[in-house]
Image: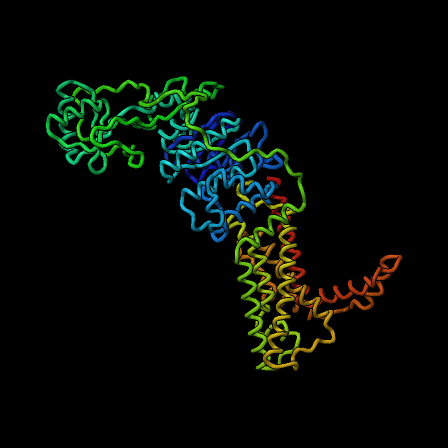
Length: 637
C-alpha cells in the first residue's frame, strides 16, 4: 500500500511549486492511475514519493518511508524513463549487473527475460532497442527483485496499441497477485481502461480521486468518429439538421478529413450521408474526453476507500463500422480542433456512462488470460560484503571501454618507449615506463586514472542503480569495491606496460636496453604506487564531482598543480631532519616487527617523502575526506 501525505515540491524562484499538497492512497491488489496533462506535476509527484527530489511531505510504502527500508529495490520497482544503461551493454549484461546490485541470483535474469518476452534479444545492445523493447527491458528491471509495489511514469508512452495492451496486462497481473501498481498517464481513456482508481492532477494540485467507473461517467462521453473526403460538407449538413430538429449536436472538425460528432449516433449520421450521397470511409462509436474541467460529483473528491468491486474494462470505443471497420492502429484525435458548427438550442450534455464501459468479471473461462509474471523469489540472499564487488566486476567487464583503454595505453606506451630509446638521454626506469620528462604522467598512470574516473563517472551518466534509490548511492561498500577493482586494474596495467615495453625494446634494439635495474624493488613499488594512486584519485574525484572529465582532471592536477607546490615547500630551509627514523620506528613497539616489517615501512615513508609521492598521498587524503563528508551530509539530509 502507498500512502502519500502532503507532497509539496520546493518553489522555483518566483514560480509556484510544481506539486502543492498532494495526498492520496494506492491500495494493494489494485491499479491506480495518476492522470494529468503534461506539466500537471505527475513526474514530480513520483520523484517526491521516491525521495529523488527535495520537498515536503512523506510517502509510506506498506507503513515505512523509503529511506527506512533496508532494501528499497525489494519493496519498490521503479520505471521513470528510459532504461538508464550504457548503450553498449547487452540486455543480459544490464540485468545481470542489476541482479548483483539488488542481491538476487543470476538465474533471475532468464526468468524476467522470458516473462517480458525479450528472449531473442538478450544479446542485443541497449542502444539498438526500439521504444517498445526498451519499455519491456525497463519493466524487467523493475520486476527483477520481485517487488511488492510498482511505480511507473507514463509506461505506455510512445508504444503501439499491441505493446500498450501487453504492458497493461502485466500491471494487471501484478495487481492480481496482491501487488500495488501506480502509474502516470496523460490519456484519460487509458486511465479508465486500465486502472481501478484514477487520481487527477491539475496545476500541481489534486482535483479528483475517483473510482474508475465514476471517472468514466463524469469525465468521458460518447462520440461518433467520421472519416470522409467530404468532411466539411457533411459537418455542415449535420449542424443544419441539428438546428432544424432542435437537438444538441456538436460537430468538431479534426485534422484532415475527420469529424468528431457529439450527441448523435452512427445511424443518424449514416442516414444523413446516404440521403445526400456523401461517401463515408469510417463511421464508428468512440469515447471522447470532456477535458480537465468536467463536472465532478462531490463524492469524486473524497479519499480512496477500499472497494472490492471487479475491475473496470476498456472504456475505449466499441466500433460499429459501415464502410470500413475501425482499427486500433488509427484512433481518432482526442483533442478537438476547430468547431465546424454549433447547435441552435445548445444545452450541456448530461454526463452518462461511457460507451463501452462495463464491469470486468473476476475470472471466467472465456476471459483473456493475463501475462505470466516471473516466479516469486522464495528465499532471499543474506546481505553479503561481496555484493558490491560482484556488481562492480560486472559493470567494468560488461562494456568494451576498459579493454579499449588498456589496449590504447599498451600500444602508446610501447611506441613511446621505442621513440625515447631512439632519441637517447632517457634513464632506463623512465624508458621502461615510457615517461618523457615533458609529460606530467606516463600513459599507464593516465590510463589507470581514466579507468578509475570511469568507474564512478559512468554511474552518473548511465545510473544503473537508479532503480535502487534513483541516484548513485554513496555507500562505503560500493566505494571499497570500486577502489579494489581499480587497484587490481591499475596493477595489471602497470605490469603489462613494463612487460610490453621490455619486449618491444628487445625486438627493436636487442638486449642492450632490457637489463634489470639494481634497485628494482623500490622502483617497482614507486611504479605500482603511482598507477594505483592515480586510479584511486580518479575514482574519488569522479565520485565527488559526478563526472568522468572531472575525475581525469583531478588526476592531471596532481603532477601539474600539487607536485610543484610540494616541491616548493620541501625546497625551503629546513632546521631539522628525520634522521634515525627507522631506529625510532623499531622502538615504537616492544617486540620486533615480523618479517622485517620496519624495513618496508621505512621504504614506504621514503616514497611518501618524495615530491610526487607526497603530492599523490596529499591529494588522495583530501579527496577521501571530501567523499566521506558528502556521504555523511547526504545521510543527514
